[in-house]
Image (cartoon, rainbow, N blue to C red; front, side):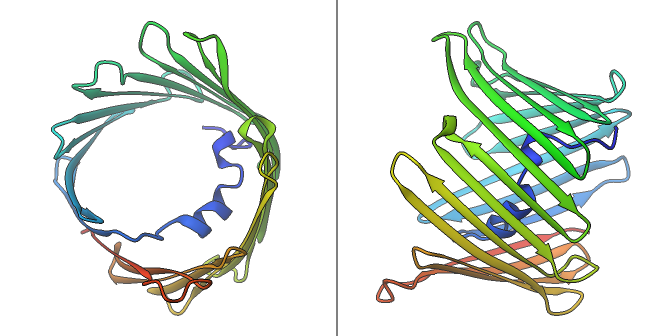
Length: 276
């Protein structure tokens, strides 16, 4: 693949991940194993509120194809097949869920030194079609996306964004929700290893005249332990501690509290992921 500007979904992704990734109020346990033939098997158990769920995911790589099959406790089977380099700089992703006959989807991604384009369509008679395009370089890129419902002949979404990326920082602005919202974010790495960072995000909803300002940070205590925290102007404070108990095996403890309603119990989450 080329070293171009990346996909539209990459705009603002680093800041979003630092503010949202690994924060959870659920209890989750997963264990992964790998066979000599290249098959990866991951079993996951989840407790969300009073609901328990589990799934088993199998992944197999063969030449330029990756096969993923996920079976959950609802007796549904999700299959995803990813093909790379069918054509130069092109990736194709096909997914479908059984027994949902209308869940089939095809996505094609094309990467160029100065552009990236994706097209996604549901595999049914009147499909939903999503198209994204990004122009620029790995340093600065401009992108847009649109969704179209062929059954109602209406646009389901149209958004645009710009991203600037430097070795120690990245910034982005996204005009979303059909022009009804604006999100600006900035992330700055505090060390060369990029294991400590500070981030800020401003979100404006024009129709409701609502503003949300969020600041957060990531700090590496040592090579195997890191902490994250975030706070927004509505008083929501989140924090987490993540420790690598074994290589690639992580335990994460997170909590969220409403600082404007301290009489309410904070929410706690626990995640344990074991990998060989």
